[in-house]
Amino acid sequence: MTRFSKFKNSEDGNIAVIFAVTAFALVLALGTTLDIGLLHTEKAKMQDATDNAALTAARIMSSQTSLEKGPREEEAKRDAEYGFSVNFQSNVVSPTTPSINFDNSSVTVSAEGKAHLNFGKVFGRETVNVRASAVSAYGENEPTPSAPCIMALSTSASPGVTVNSGAKINAPTCEIHVHSTRNPAFIVNSGVTFDFSKVCIAGDRIIDNNSGVDNIETSCDVAEDPYAGNIPVPDSSSCDYSNGNYSASQITLYPGVYCGWHNFNSNRSDVHFEPGLYILKNGGWNVNGGNWSGTGVTFYYADNSKIQFNSGVSADFTAPDSGDYKDIFMAETASSNRSQFIFNDSKGFIFEGVIYLPNRQFIMNSGSDTRGRTLGIIADTFMFNSIKLNIDGGVSSNDQASSGGVVSTELRLAQ
Image 1 (cartoon, one colour):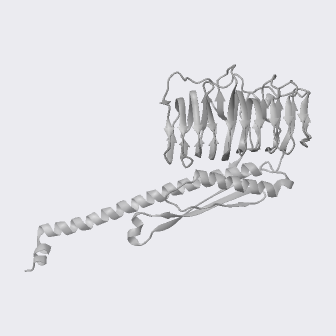
Image 2 (image 1 turned 180 degrees about the vertical axis):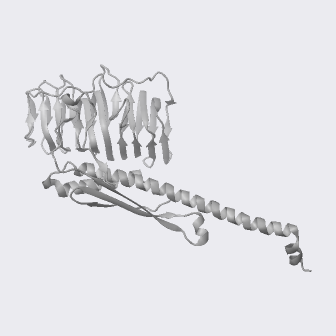
Image 3 (image 1 turned 120 degrees about the vertical axis):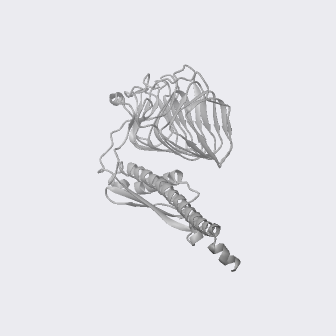
């Protein structure tokens, strides 16, 4: 009898064969399960990014007029593509640019990419197509009620708002309200694009250096601050994180109290913020680039702390849609001290929510590119240098203050 025959006929040999077959089946099942789980995860991520892109495009299209259809579609497509790229970042699925199509009342966003399998390679199948699509409907092109989306609260600053040459500010559905009564209360220079439904200035003296802005109203009844005393002051007595330095390629931050100075040193970092309240005190954050994103996020400054956005930063944030800080993206503790809050050169900011900094001199410098899906900014004073700022919607006006929040267009995902 040969050795093989002896092995085949022996009990130990049979067990070994059975074990080998069983082990192979288990490995096959496990590998297939892992690949299926991977595909489900990537599909869900792509679907979320597609949904968000459709809502972003529809929100922009909802405020168009018939004459704006072409430019609005271009803007909606650009912002939707940018939002998709920020929300869908994958090491598994090959890069994909979504397809964005418009009709008279809805926008359709479709995306497709190839997911690279791990175990599937054993059987000669290295990739599988992953697809997602979303349709977001928007209403008829009814005009959106005007509301102040920028409010300069200082009554004594001279000026309360300065708009320098090169500034391009597009907020056609809302107003800018300047509380200053000094001389001058408002300065606007030549070479600006300044598209508001109205500029309402409490004072009667301004400097207009051939700007071409023709909808400035002086001695105007400005809206009152709708958030004064209405934003809860959080407990910041203890520190959760102190004096951090961040340089990794992937960074995840969590709500809590951040004390001292925190430095973000790499322009290649992807910084993700988990939902919640981020309290800064006794210092600030020094940001030197990177890609920032978070949903349901509020930054609260317990003193003169700040986030200093320097250069090469891109960001996509939304404020909470419920709770004590509903619609609030940034806020601060009331103080008699005045300090600066500066946005410098950026790759593009997208914010949704209210920035409430009544003690700050809000400065946007050269190269800063900011888009607000629904954005309101309230500060002590403003200076706009050579920047790009686009705002949809605005801060609640005085008769809307009881409900608070942001004036925005209701959107829905079509079934």
